[in-house]
Image 1: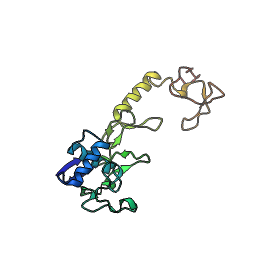
Image 2: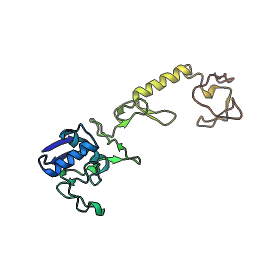
Image 3: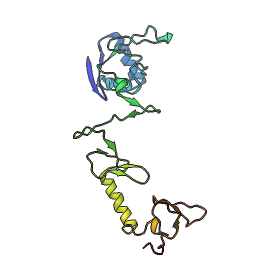
Image 4: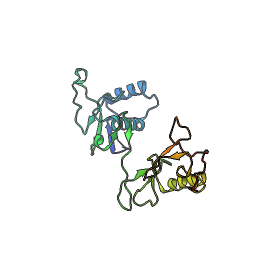
Length: 210
């Protein structure tokens, strides 16, 4: 029997369900891992574990499966004679196609724009993907978050609403001083904490600036 399981790459989980070796393994798997398992759910679990941790890793309830017909090579004495009745057929380098972060979580594969071929970015605002080349109006906020055009529009609308269309901003406030040529300065509303956090309701007109 062969059951195809599509994940990041396609893996064929191959076993002979009539063999005594597999029957013993499958009975043990149902006893220790999943009492309701059938052949399909078993194959899906094996393929997912192999994709997540690698085809060379021990799979609980299964052992070290063969890979493309080759017996697993191990330096552990207790598994030197281990010959798993499950074989994984992988045309691609599964471990090379799937990337993992430091916590073992799968890192999403890069997606590309169908129009221009550029890598798509994930918006830090709404979580949707967008093309930085084709999505006109995308950009970053003051915190450096990459945003799609829809979220940038929403940020601009909020800024206009909160600052009365840009009239009530730090640069026009009497509490703001030490402004340099680039527009950077400091807020001295609280002299012990000269900084600005978000929109402020303490704005006071600066003489000659409004």
